[in-house]
Length: 67
Image (cartoon, rainbow, N blue to C red; front, top):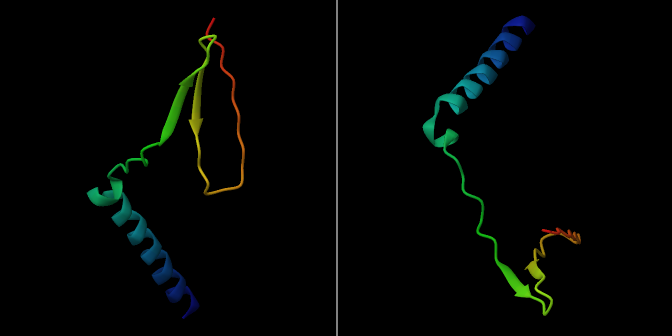
């Protein structure tokens, strides 16, 4: 009885995985949301890009130099 239940559960998992792999709608690429950013150029020519995301309380800063 227990082996039959385990086989049935395994068959269901394999079927679900196969359907998700074969279903074109499931494989369709989802587009990321458009980023709402602001660009500013300082007097010395340095460009600043601001991107605010208030979904999490995290601050991240990067500095890239193109010289």
